[in-house]
Amino acid sequence: MKTIELIVPCYNEEKCISLFYDRIKEVFSDMPGYRFIITFVDDGSKDNTMNEIKTVVERADAGKVQYISLSRNFGKEAAMYAGLSKSVGDYVAVLDADLQHPPELLKEMLDAIENEGYDCASARRVSRKGEPMVKSALSKAFYHVINHVTVIDLVPGSTDYRLMKRKVVEAIVAMSESERFTKGIYAWVGFKNKWIEYKNVERAAGKTKWNVRGLFRYAYSGFLAFATTPLRAVIYFGMFIVFVSVLAAIHVFRAALKTPGERTGYASIIILMLFLGGVIITILGMIGEYLARIYMEVKRRPIYFERESNIDDNVANDEKKH
Ligand code: UDP
Ligand code: MG
Image (cartoon, rainbow, N blue to C red):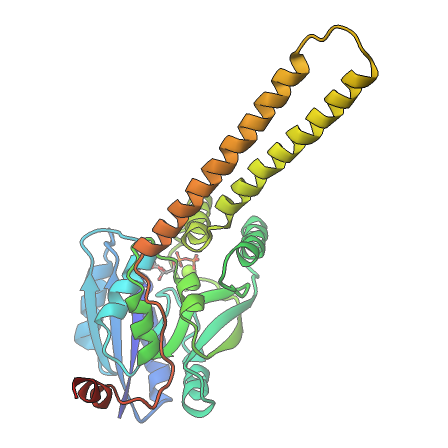
């Protein structure tokens, strides 16, 4: 029997925990033939969340309910990592406690993995109804920029809600960087993923943990975690200034030849300043480029992940010895 494990990050979700469990229970009863584990990750909640989780653990009659409680609020990214790194399920899903990620989609996700040959299935929000307009507009701009300047391809409306096979979980956990941006990591690890669309749902209870400042920080850190292009832009900018200073020099020199007379020397000083400024910016950009490589290197990301292979590692190692 295969095990499906649900990782649920919770921060101040006292009103949602038992609602969440009841909804999940209904979904489970529709999916016989699987063992279920629910892992609540309490991300240093300051309200009654932990007691609510313990109550659910006690009354749980569908699946096994367990929890990890973090020592303080580390943020959703860290909470998801904690849950994923401790997970044991054959299939693992990450979903929000506030029921904004409809648990009913799990069936469709499972079907994609078991019957359609996918490694994972992710939820994609196609309507942003009930969300402030500013948030939608900003998030649209974010996707536009990040897709242009980074190696990863983010699909607009993509969420952290995803069901995946064990090997995908292991790949995600192997990305041990501490500045985490899960949507980017999902895209970076690859594997065959099916997008499952759903309409935005309002929170079951409680309120969102996000504010504009938090979202900006999230977008910025996501951007920096995958982009090194801004530094390259600095090099081009420096080269452009050098080019302009050379053009200006030619122009001034020709004008000087045409109209003889006394010179103030302003033009040459300005051109020289422009030239030197451009050279310095170019060099800074180059140093930045090395810095970017060091930055990417210190993340110690794996070089590749394997999807399939018919090489038996044990046999290969034995042969090496002989
Ligand atoms: N969350 C968390 N740690 C945090 C903030 C949020 O674990 O520091 C959890 C939260 O409990 C919820 C999920 O992350 O299960 C999504 O948060 P929220 O619903 O506030 O975000 P929104 O859906 O508004 O984007
Ligand atoms: Mg939410």
